[in-house]
Length: 340
View 1: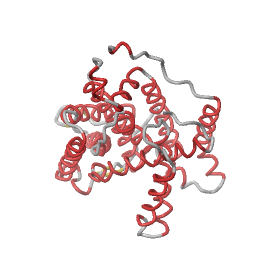
View 2: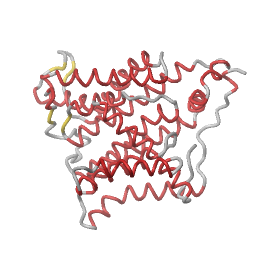
View 3: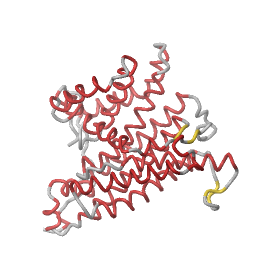
View 4: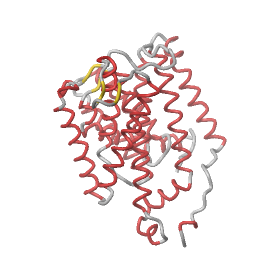
């Protein structure tokens, strides 16, 4: 059997029930800013924006973790570097200076987002090329070590705020839109999230996605039929890093602030919890997981400063009894079907 034996069948067509559920979800996300305004809860728009940004990061991690079987504890590096791309370019734009004496600053979203994707991809290529020569616990520890090295690097960079981080006074500009308006920025993040999830759907259903799934299930068998697992895993890791860098750039714009905390290993853990909570190896699971974790965190912190004591058991119950995370739970309730 050869590599050609894996037949491309394209992305699976959604069933009628699942298509209706996806349509309802899309319409709900489009209508959300207007509904919360009508209900007198405008503060929910920034919360929903935060959910969308984390959903992009978690879905990108899920490509490596859920579909590629790579348990990366270093994705905070891509998230933070994406944020610092926005911060550094904005600093050079304000100071009218050149980054490294070569690159002019900018405040244009159409430049900073591709730059964050490019830098995230190059960083993922470097880390992945070295880390993927190992597996298991060694892979986890090496990705964690790279992220922590970058964390301490940015802590020591006093020119870019060091431990205090950098303030970005204005969000990046896009076609003359008022990006300072929360609803406008929400729709920008929603459009980016829709494109990312569409791209991931195509990747998962492609020949590349099927090879990746085969490698996750049995890497030795795939190698035996003539497929080189390393290059497929590296490609998935790079795509995953690019998506996470994009999310970091959006988060820097959302917060108008970037700091080394975005690169800390706890951020990787947070993204991993979102994936596991929503459903590992499912397309929409990271979106559900991001929404659940961000909303739970927001509600519980308004009740008590010891909110982690309540969040922990809730997460434990979801993971133990939903059999596939929130995506699995919704599937059994008839709200769409699992993407597996």
